[in-house]
Image 1: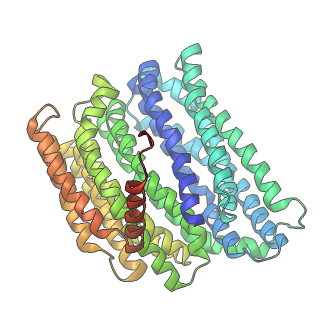
Image 2: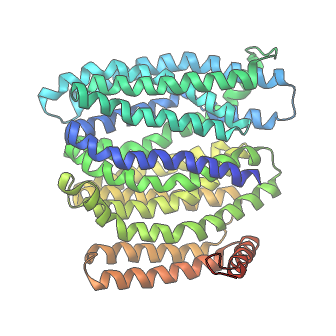
Image 3: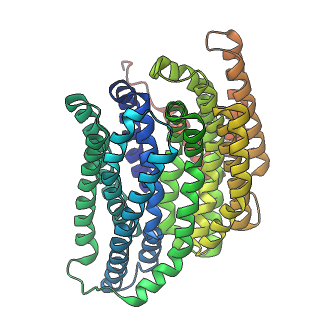
Length: 490
């Protein structure tokens, strides 16, 4: 099945940069220090947020090209060129806007030692130059996703991300931790990906065709992309708000203490992201009944595959952080990571419904859910940080992810498939957060709690696994048991 194969490509493409990140984050903390690393974290967040100038055309391009699978090549080429032209102009506008916004934020809002402020402001133009690169990359990637070229996408992405991690680190090691050098190296890495993906899109969609920028295609793309664009604006706002509020209230060092466990917990999104990215082109061309069947199967499969690893993460993130970065971050980081893991578990299932709504041509419902969430989320975020510090911010993130899951899944099909199973899994995860926080890995109670909760989660996973997948797993296990031991003689 191509969805399974494409999911595998996406998963491998995400795993390699994660492994690299695990190696490089301690090196970054050592070479550039906690404050500069916090500034870099905010810089990447700003860049991600100003990707909203993509106008949703990355996802719109993927949607349109998927739907035009059987159309003439010139039609697909016109869709691609139209999206590319609009995003080139919007990327320049976004870069100029980011320049002004970042200069103001780092000058007047962000808490940082004054000796570092001038260095930050000198690097802002490089950050602004990254916006058109990001918006163009969105269209190029969306076009290749629409053609289901996931292997090529991930090869380019892995190389680019590797350079993105290593080039700034090498510059910091050789020339010193200057932010302009770090951002310049990162921009060069993204430039490589832009050129490589552009070449592949030219070969796949433009070469030999008579496509052109078409006003009708621009309108169709913007009509779909308008709601996606609002989602692209609200989604990053909800996602990055915690670090901006922490930076404003607690300072740059606190951003690092929060970002390190957040990034570690966030790596767990690779499987649902890999699956839904592969599903989107299929869902876009499917009937409503087929969409429901595909998403129900994906939800039950993820419930079986993810809950036990997430529970393991809840117990192991504290010891891992201590081994990974030691005393370079605050002791509260392990609790922050545990709480965020619960939110990431819920976010995995929300992502399936998010993808289904966009593939069904209803990105407006995604945006309306986000608008509904904004006031309570910001209130809980602010009060959580004031009352409980960094764990309060993590609680707000987890609560919003759970609300995402419930609301998006309900709007996608007026039902919550497997909700009883999910409720028990959630209860076990929350219990795991509590028990892992009161005992250490050196305590026998820690091991007993992990064993009991793990066995319960494993039993639920076996129960919720879709029937055909359970039968396939049993068949493979039986075949493995019947296989003769190659180590024995005749």
